[in-house]
Image (cartoon, rainbow, N blue to C red):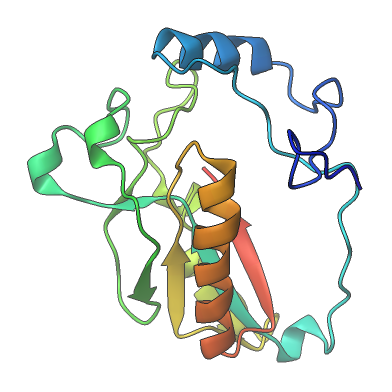
Amino acid sequence: MDTEPDNPYGFAPPHDAPIPYLHRIRTYYQTLGYGKPYEWAHFAEVPFQPLKKPLAESRVALITTAAPYQPDKGDQGPGAPYNAAAKFYQVYSGDTSEEHDLRISHIGYDRKHTTAEDSRTWFPLAQLRRLAAEGRIGEVAPRFHGTPTNRSHRTTIEVDCAEVLKRCQEDRADVAVIVAN
């Protein structure tokens, strides 16, 4: 694993990019005033951890980058333009037995070809509940967890991921579904 000072997390080299729109993203962030070009965070090698028990017996946690709706933060509805005011900066959790009003206006997604009208596509809590009722998964963990979409690899890995892991362990989750919007 490459852990040179300019690559402390061992990310794959920049030319090993799975998504072709990186040039557009880099240009976008530089236009916003970020000096260093955006680097897509992905690993050349990812350790695989097999399930310790069948999925039908596992407690499943849901992790999302969707934000709780904040009425004072402007338009956050389906198809809303990008809304940085709706961002959040700390991990949050919600009770999976309740309904939640989460939005994705703070995320940069293709608003020309999608409207984000169906929240089940980016927050599949209802589907996880159905899978639990059908016996396809053991159960849904008692909380879901929201992770910020900060632009700092260091903060994401060292702060946010560590906090989400701690919360998943507190919930005795066996596996997690991560929906990065």
